[in-house]
Image (cartoon, rainbow, N blue to C red; front, side, top):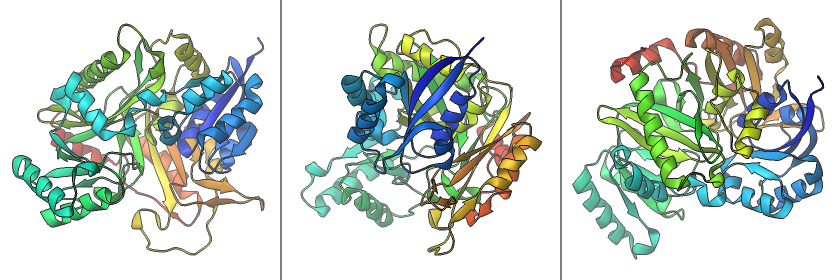
Length: 464
């Protein structure tokens, strides 16, 4: 039987988009032509694209112009990065070109405001909401006034808090007591760095426990949940150093993580369903189509608490899931559009994602002025050896006119190991990283056994 042709727009930045393109290209029922709007000339994307355009700022108007020029060949589009979603890329493309987008509308780009998230959670699942207070820039006429207000809230809640910008900062604007500051003056300095930067500030109680990431596809009527993953935000081994966009992640060979049990999984599903019920109204809301809920949870002694909600696929977490997706991903996309999404199934495999990053990323080096060329050929050569259980997804990399690929400023490339268990997947992922030729570094403890055992002992659950 001849595969049906389908044209797909992918709005790209980072390894997440490469994983999406890879999953779509593995379809057996559809022959996919990709129309890729990219932040830079990503070598993976350029290789797979029928048409490829570089839009460095991912400006929504410029993306729409690209879609308009190719709309007769595009059946639908997906958006990986958050900023175009927040800026209403779906609204603009659908209204001006008629091309259907698989991402939430601007109205439901929930990660656009952490304050709005906390208010929403108070309305539908307050038990999962940490205590918080909002400090709007417009409400305070002087540093003394806002400092007095901050001190008053700390007197109520205690000093162990997290300080966050209202607007998105890719996980990098958050300061946490004990990690980024250890006294009130340091805390307030972090507060003012956000405040002076132009954002309202939210202070939340610090919640202790073990983190997991929840993701779900949505057709507006129902959620199709994906397996739980664990992200590593901190730059360096042993979870020290500044927050980053995510240095790696792991997923177990079942729907929950080793420090969780089935009841924990059911709890996070119940909480997200409450949020979904609140937003979709009576029956259905197609504006939520895509991945409207990529939710960071903290599993505490008092139940699951929600750290943040995002309205797009996780990076690196979606890279854990897509390589082991049993469903035809193109078919999943059509089902989201048609409103008949069904259960998502994954192979019973574990996956580990490890990022290799530039020498000056996360403050590993203050400065690096050496050669930034990166050669992935050694890692690609391993793929045959591992029978496709190693995936290599370039991220912040650029293919230049000299034919070489170069690392840019953010996370350069990730390797995904697929195995029968986390330990096997980790070894495959690290083998891929070791065979990349370039001045890059990586965390070595993503999915490490001792790290997971520490999580299990702190969580007190274990596998079940």
